[in-house]
Each structure stands twice: as structure tokens, then as C-alpha cells.
Length: 308
Image 1 (spheres, rainbow, N blue to C red):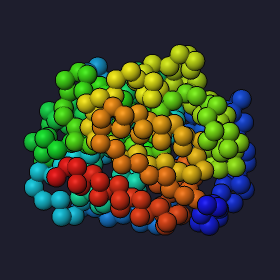
Image 2: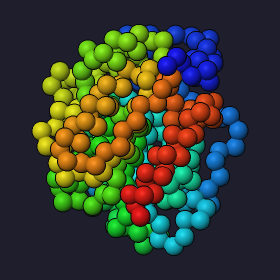
Image 3: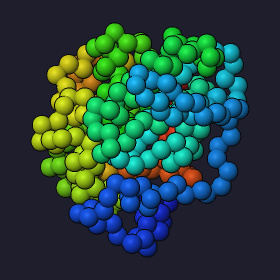
């Protein structure tokens, strides 16, 4: 399928912006360039508040969302934002977290994990996992049901969600009902066909960008830890059920599908889908790409079914 017309129009808008030189740009300079676009009022939810999470040896931010009609003691989805582990924050994914809360009927705790390269692996993952432990320990304060938990994330956040699910299994952590992985980073192999076809810079995310992100997150991209390149983990059995969503024109498409296949081969219940005509980031671009909304609704429905 050709590019979705709404995506094509958005790419035309992006093309008017000055190009970024990833050979010279600093992480802070890229963060300054990537301020969220406000395109109208955000999706309404019943309750939103920022919460400081006191984790071992540090405090990080989070934002807690409760949708209308959640009832008493709703399920909880821990949401980890994308941005290559280097950019992104609570503001960049505020609308996404709200939309996911509305679609799933669950409360959502968006985690403002520390960013690379100031905090490299495993620091961001530690924040995401410890936020899960914090949420369970503070379930009464949050008013959520600690027996109904899921993790979700897009791109690098999908990578973190997948790694949190692995750690929860291996470290006897909280039992997760589901993992929602939205075009996740699953490997550090830049030779896959989807990188060759889609990584040239035409479709928003490029190979050069991903190499830059990886170089800031890990010490050696050629020997990644299986909590970073989760596709290389040697044991995926016993993980929670998964929804894996990828985009046709995304360099990460093939590794996301490969991770879905690896989960299924390990006996995990997996629902995977490739969004035709879409690019990396489309899920969080729904205000400019309304055709993304059905994918958000389906993802929410999968969470709702898994969480009960």
C-alpha cells in the first residue's frame, strides 16, 4: 500500500523543517527541537495528576491518568514513552497516554524515566521496572487493582516495556497480564530489509537516527545486552500475552514482527499487526493522522480484554 494521505501531508510539513545533522547534534539540542505540537485540547479523562516516584536512590516524575467510567480499583497500565531513550517526556506523550486510558478503560501511569546519555543503560530500564514495583506498593494510594497490571510503550518505550516484562518474570516481580508493544525497538541490526527500504530518511525515522540513539543508550551497540536487544534474549517463555503493532514504512518493522514471532514460538499468546501506509510514530500522531485512531482503539480493546 502507498503512504497514507494524512501521513504524506505530515511528512510534507516535516520536510519544511531544517535538517538535523546527527554527526554533530547534541542530545539536548535534539530535545529542544522536539517540542510537542499542540493541535487542540487533549483527549479528556476524569482525573490527571503528576506524582513524584520515590525510587531507591532517586526520584523521578510520572503522570497518573484515570479515564471516565473506570470505576473503583481499575486496572493499571504502566506507559513508557518513546524517543530513542534520549528524547521524549511526559508532555510529548501526554495525548497518547490519555487516548490509551480512554480506549482501555484502565488507569495509566506514564513514567518519566531518566534519559540517555546522561543515564545510560540500565538506568532508564531500572526506572521503568522500579516504577512498576512502586505502583504495586502504592496501589491503595493510587486506587488501582494491583492484580491487574500491564505495560505499554512505543518505540524505545516499547523496548523498555518488553524488557520490564522479562525482568518481572525473572525477578519474581509483579504478575503482568499483558504487554502492548507499539513499533518497538527489539534489535540493533541495521541490515534488516525494513531498514534498507525505509531507513533513508524519507519516512521520519532513519537508520542514522537509530544508530545515534543506540550509541547514546549503550556502551557497545555491537554487543547489546538482551535487555536492550530483546529479540536476542534466549528465553521468552512464560511472558505475558502481547500485542505488537508495527508500521509498513518503518525501519523497525521487521524487528518488531520478528519479536512477535519469537514470542509466539516461545508459547506466548501474541496478536501482531502491520499498519499499512503508516510510518514510525503514527500511533502518537493521531491528532494529525486521524486514521491512527482505530489502532489506538484496538490496542485499548486488547488491554481491556487481557486486564479483565
